Image 1: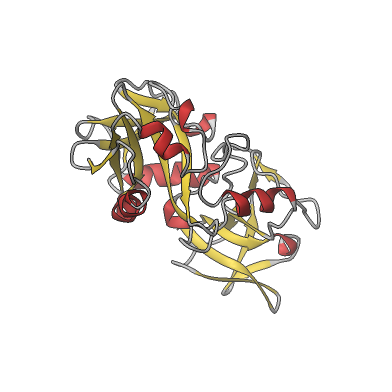
Image 2: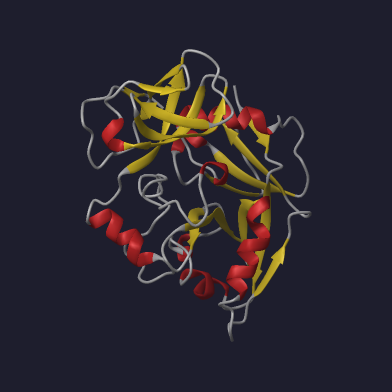
Length: 276
């Protein structure tokens, strides 16, 4: 059965002007030139030191780029992008009140400003509409879908701390390795080619309802921490070298449930993958 969810925690930034593509191309992790009507790209804005600041989907219309971004991060995104505008002929506008962001999956047919979710086919489609679409469910419906697939979101990531390779951007088509320089590229490339990733954002399952947040331990050792969750399923940032150990959050035992798309640089012991 086709599913459709309204995502009120997402907003839209409009980037206009004749230099919009070249301007954004030098600042974000993916190839902006691949954004076209009916095909968005998923990308990230990093700090100059290569740490995560925000993620967004880049849509292209005939006269603008539209960024489907976390509402909470939009003021920071606009401020940071504005610092690099210099003589570029671009405009940056918060258009969150003009668009309602939706996600559809399980066969939902999208029209208007829409695109397949570039991260994963099973994720469905992203939709920018002028108002909330009829029949759309609330964000909790999409949260369950997202967690089942193990897809990251701004709520799971730590600005100024998280590396893109820790968060799955390399596996989920959020980085273009051939596009050339962009802000934070050096550290991102180094973590890939030198195998420096020591932790990953990984789906986990528990035998009982998970707490709001908390530290995850492997015996006496710190193994990571819980991020977004719903019921018995969640995402956790975990040390790769602890994945073969019994893991707990407080008194609750948790189990990593690796989706098929996730590739670890090193796994201490075989872990059964969960089908997406």
